[in-house]
Image (spheres, rainbow, N blue to C red):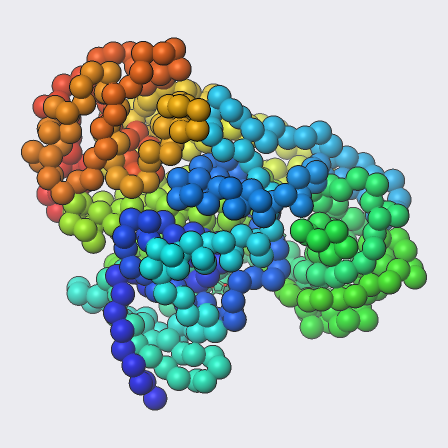
Length: 510
Ligand SMILES: Cc1cc2nc3c(=O)[nH]c(=O)nc-3n(C[C@H](O)[C@H](O)[C@H](O)COP(=O)(O)OP(=O)(O)OC[C@H]3O[C@@H](n4cnc5c(N)ncnc54)[C@H](O)[C@@H]3O)c2cc1C
């Protein structure tokens, strides 16, 4: 029985990292959202751990960087990837050195490792403080849309009660199986599921076997093929064991007894005291949705793209999808952008995901021992060098997602350079709330030029410094307009040219 009906500006289906972060970014821009997830609350499996500099910049801009870094403190000394037959045996480091966690000249934010189960509550609290409504233990059972709105039927899994929600837009952050993607008939391109694993969370004292904590260990012997990762608690671990459905195996085979045996085989300690906390199945999947949008519905995160874990790009890309989409939804909902701006979400984010797919698969193959030629392994490019070409950018000169090197200059379609404005404030701390103008002289005429065309557009104007650090925003008299996501929308020297570019940048003619 349907017993209630409510409205929201944006319905977010899926409370993984992509959906939870999208809610925060929308809330920061004053957009009301309702987030539903069938899980009872935040994840207890800590899968995504590596939060890259770009994602940390986005969390920093909404004031969450310190909390997230604090959640990552237990992992401060986990680095490197080792291969071994058992944990008790000899380790062969695939890489042992500390990867560069800070690129101070490029970003105000450092790479961070933090457990997903610790990050999710931080995002939920931040979303709640910004007006997001959360409904856990709630499943989306149907979704329809017309010219006016999307209508979703939700079921409370505890009571069986159904309710209806009317939303202007829907973000489908419902994971790699994405029931919404399936329902909309959006195809996924790629090999699909390439490996099935059981993720076993357990407690054991491994001090005698782990003289040094690593990012993770790849363990292969006759009894088990597995990946072992640390968690935030010293004696709590997560072991991911591959199984083969073609051989009749399933995650249900991992009874407590079998899970304990797998842990002991991986450690190489037959009598080890092991306490199993949780066993969950996951599939390593490779696929890219052939479109990211159907009317009022937008795919984000694993619903749109899935890759192997190598490179730690899955959740990072999902969070960045949500950020790209949030300000565009805010623009359309608040009336300072035309509906066509929403088309640039797919143009920008799907192109990036398509390019990343091959790079990540190659990195994963290399990690398991394959020889890969032409391997682009430049992390700085992956993380900070993603470039866009779309109608939301004027005058992009590049034709590829990644260049050969990371440029530190203001170029349309590229992430704006990081410059310290004072001891604590980066240019990236100014982004997120609206557009930002940087001008070498009084910026007022430039802001006025924009407001002649779109008076509602939130624009913060800054006069840039003359110090060498600001050279990346020069040379004078160049002025740059930066989008809410920190990407360069336009550069030029004439306010009238800027005014002429604005209608197209904001899809105002649609
Ligand atoms: C072992 C491992 C290590 C990884 N390490 C990293 C890493 O270091 N860094 C990184 O960036 N990525 C990493 N990844 C990838 C990362 O975990 C995923 O890309 C990311 O968590 C996906 O987030 P998501 O929000 O898109 O989807 P999910 O986390 O899958 O969330 C989808 C949510 O939708 C909900 N849902 C689905 N259908 C419905 C419905 N009909 N109604 C209500 N709710 C619904 C589900 O309950 C689920 O909570 C790793 C992955 C694995 C497996």
